[in-house]
Image (cartoon, rainbow, N blue to C red):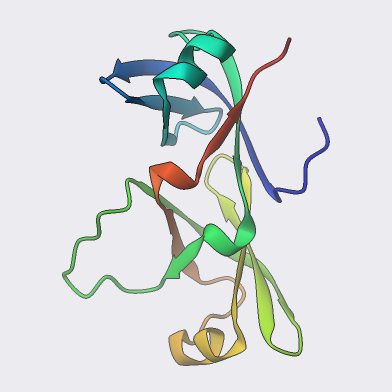
Length: 142
């Protein structure tokens, strides 16, 4: 599949919780990490989402927030994936940060140059990529 979303996570649906309007889909990634997608109940039906099927979770790079130190705080974003910075590509205004999870899954985040400097992000550093469940788009093979 070709898509403009830089982050394409292949995984298996491990849990589906359906509400009146929305549903939460828990996806087990190949490296053992999990992520959560919040999609509509209509999308569950249209895509035939159920436990055990393989899905692709798409997340655009600007939706990823990089955290270097939680400082004792907790955040409401359900998806918190820790990895190591593998590459930093600075642009005129923004920088792309490439991260690799323990299982080898890459994540790309686009943040401002100021954020990179303020957080002191460096190659080889451990960081956490966080994003809301609502930022995840699911795709299935037809």
